[in-house]
Length: 222
Image (cartoon, rainbow, N blue to C red):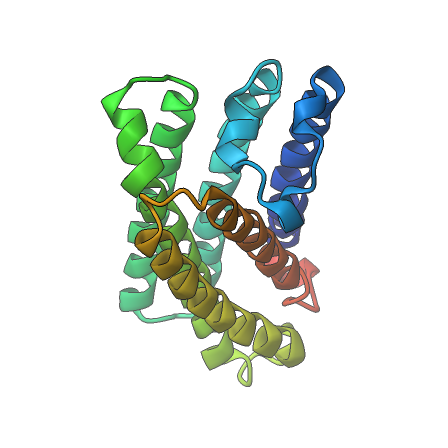
């Protein structure tokens, strides 16, 4: 089933890419040796924009952009078959466009030092990308949670419930992280911001992984 394949792809491809790029930098320069998930020693963007990791990071992130679009468009198609309200369908499409546009800008200007667009993406624009992605995941989980009892033959109610509440947690964690980042943005405490970034990134990947388990009878949905 396409939905499941996309879920797994978005759960693992970004994670494997970032970790691979980090190991490449560690191999080339000992100053990169640390655990950013616990130390917050540098940002994900720093890993992605430095040579030679940038040659892997940017192309793969373009693939991830396409996968995001495919995932939510596939969800849109599934919900349309289930006769879900146009309000939810339009919300998913709008949030998908916002996610894809801001991620595309981020990828395009990654590593372009001195660019006003890069400064915008680093300070503000990246929040639009993350926020729209997380809100889209929540809307998807909300709709699945609304219809789970009517489609128990093909939908795992347990997986949907976990997916729904996990995305509520994701929003709460995002709000806390945003407030912390906003308050200390001009401060010198960079490690805390980076630590939040790496761990929140992990939570997003887990959300996609959970969505893999939503459908039970896969053949009927392909």
